[in-house]
Image 1 (cartoon, helix red, strand yellow):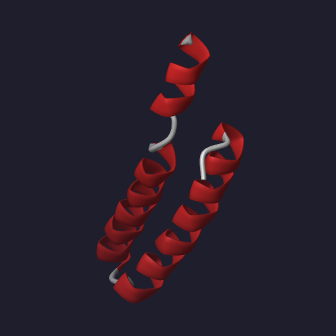
Image 2 (image 1 turned 90 degrees about the vertical axis):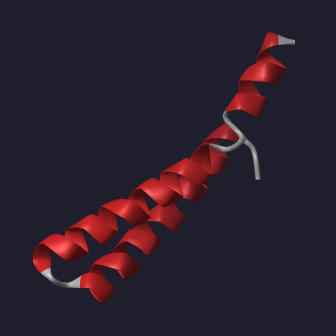
Image 3 (image 1 turned 45 degrees about the horizontal axis):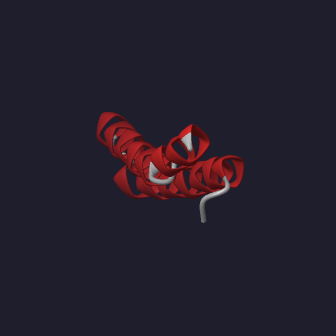
Length: 60
């Protein structure tokens, strides 16, 4: 039963990782005055990180 709760707690982890990467890209874009490029890079890294985290947790 504890294993089921731990897996359900990790179910939303990918979404937080995705949003975090997007916000980091936003901050880098503001800092270097390259907003479109930094947002696209943050978006791409966020999708990759979300895929990895969802693969590791087994929650799609």
